[in-house]
Picture 1 (cartoon, rainbow, N blue to C red):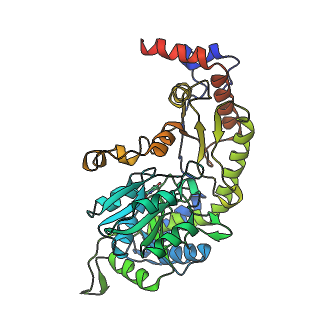
Picture 2 (cartoon, helix red, strand yellow):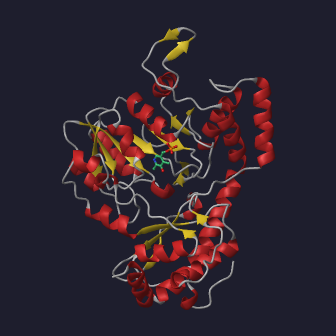
Picture 3 (cartoon, helix red, strand yellow):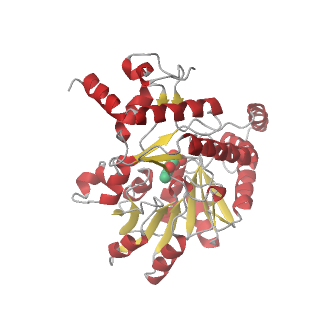
Length: 401
Ligand SMILES: *Cc1c(COP(=O)(O)O)cnc(C)c1O
C-alpha cells in the first residue's frame, strides 16, 4: 500500500488503487482462534451440539452478568430473537418503529402481520424522535420499538414516559449496542426487553446469533418456551413456538469473544480517535459521535453535508471504492422506501430520515483495520474533498455525461 501524493494518482484517473486487498466495513472481530478451536474440539467429543448445551448456558450467564440483567435467552440470530420478543410481548395491530434501521427490525413486525408505523429519527442521535412517536399513537398502537443506532442510546426516559402514559410495550433493538452504556447503566436493561444481534459483523459475534435480554421473569419464561417449539419438558408442549435455539459452536465463539470484548472496544476507540484527527477540519464532513466512553464505537459513521462538502456522499464513495475502501451507505434509502413497505404503505414521507440516508457513510473500523490503513483512508478522503470540483468532473466524464 502506497499513499497517493496528488489527485492525479487517484484510481478514478486510471492509477492502481491504494489498497490491493479491499477493506470491508464490518469485517469480523475474531477472538484467539486456538481457544475457539479447543472449545469446538471439546464440544464435538461431548456430542452435545445444540438444545441448551453447557456452552449456551455459560454464554447466557456471562452475558446476563456483563449486562447486569436477570435473563438472557440466546438465539440463532437477532431477527428471530426480535420476532420472538415481539410475539412474547403480545404486540399486535400497529407498532411504531424508525424507518432508519436495518430492515430486519421492520420485517420482524410485518412477518407476523403487525403494521409497522414509520417514525422519524432525531438527526442528532439517529434514534427514534419521541415527539414524532407521540403524534403516531392511535387506538391500534400496542408498542414502540426503539433502535440504539450505532450503539447510540435512544431517548430512553422520554420513551418510557410515553409508553407508560399510553400503556404501550417498549422494546429495544439493541443489535448495535452490546457493551454500550446509558448514564452508567448497560444497554439491555431498558424497556420491557432488548434484543442483541451477534451476527459476524457485530462487535461481538457468535458467527450468527442473537439474544433477548430482560428483567421480566414471566416474559423470559415465555421466550424460553417459544424459542424451543414450546417444549416445557420431554413430550410436553405448552406454548406456540418456533426454533430459535443457539448452537454450541456459536456459544463457543461467543464465550471467547466475550473474553476479548474489552480489547475489541479499545481498538474501536483508538480507531475513532485516529479518524477524528485524520478527518478534522474537512469542510462539510462530520463524524457522528456521542459519548464514546459509553459506546462500543463499533461503527465509524461520517455525515457528508451536501450543501457544504465539495463532493457528494455518493461521489466520495465512488472515489473510495476505486481505491479499495468499501465504504458503505447505511439503511439507504430508508425502510419505508423499500419493498414491501413502499407498496403496502404508500405516501409515507419522512424528510429527516430521507436526508440522513443521503448523508451517512460508514468507514472500516474494528480489529481488522490497521493504523496505517486508517491513515491512508483519511488521506484519501481529505485529498478527494480538497479537489471536489476536479473529481466531480472526472466522475461525470467516466459516466459519459
Ligand atoms: C444486524 C441487525 C439486526 C439483525 O440481526 P441478525 O442477527 O443479523 O439477524 C437487526 N437490527 C439491526 C439494527 C441490526 O443491525
